[in-house]
Amino acid sequence: MTIMSELINAKKAAPALACLSDVTRNHVLEDVARLLVEKTPDVIEANQKDLAQMPKNDPMYDRLLLTPERLQGMAVEARTVAGLPSPLGQTLFQTTRPNGLEITRVSVPLGVVGMIYEARPNVTVDVFSLCFKSGNVAVLKGGKEADHTNKALMRLIHDTLDHHKLPKSAATLLPATRQATGELLQAVGLVDVCIPRGSKSLIDFVRTTARVPIIETGAGVVHTYIDESADLVMAKDILTNAKTRRTSVCNALDCLLVHKSHLQNIIFLTKDLARQNVELFADDRAYGALAGSYPAHLCHKATSEDFGREFLSPKLAIKIVDHLGEALSHMTQFSSGHSEAIVTQDNKAAERFLREIDAAALYVNASTAFTDGAQFGLGAEIGISTQKLHARGPMGLEALTSYKWCVRGTGQTRA
Image (cartoon, one colour):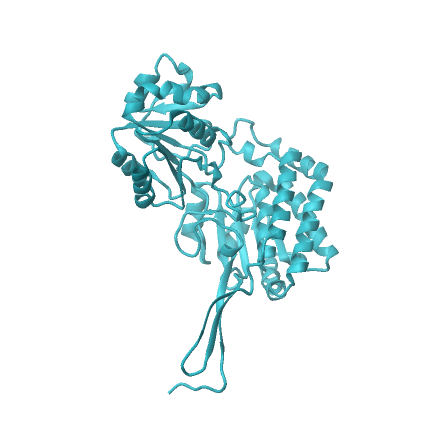
């Protein structure tokens, strides 16, 4: 079957999928979750084929890796999505006009949602779960790095759809080729929105190539500022978690900003990073304070290119700032609009940070590792939108709906 034929079939499936009962949707997602656990050995076997083609020191390796625990987590998220209230058919606005017209605005699916992603096979299940629950058809285009794994996961989804006598075109996995990416991005009239999730280069390519509407997600240049009034034990724990919990994800810390009053405490703040072999790129003041204490092979003088970098690896830029205003200015200059944080005991500083920094998720005294759909109570996520139109931040069920206006009359005509 050609790519265009698959897209046509996906579009044809959209009306029926939008009309399914929520009970049916939930049963399907529960069955997908069950199969994820039952077929764990099959999925792990496929995943090992993909991992064998990638060096272990590649930052994408951890994203690609599936374990029984991660598959169990994927199953839990699918069940969580099943248990969430349906976002469809909600009355968002209603009014009765003086002429008697009854007008309501009702939530509806977007239609056909295209997803382009790289070495993140969990996205296959997350996107299907969210799309199916919200009445959308999912068209998935994964990277070649995860192709064996994605195909194994899609077989589980298709087996479930078959069992419930639903069309397989409710979820389509396109070939892991550039041609498939190109046809998906050009499928005007067949694809209602396309969402790229991955590297900056992927998102830039989609932005400049697509003829269908897109929502940008993923790229995160993330900062944490340790303010003059910060609790240092709290600050150390927050920055360590934000940097080292999973270094390859988009909410991982990339740049640490430290108030000059804490220059003498920089060894304390970074000692847990040293234990986990985090490579530092420090400005002159920070480098001078770290030299001789932080492992020499892991500590380098920063260049201008180190600020504004999304590392996606155990690397971190550090800059000393003279005051809050300088920290906010640096964030504003280099932020990608993803996640930013401040550690402070000064309420005025916290409120100024929340007021002035323009990003999808802002944190006061907490790790940026929480920028995640499940952590925000959304069940799972399509991605983290870094734009402002339609959706921003973690995108869950509500972000996969639009609305239509329903007008009921008794024969009214307009003069």
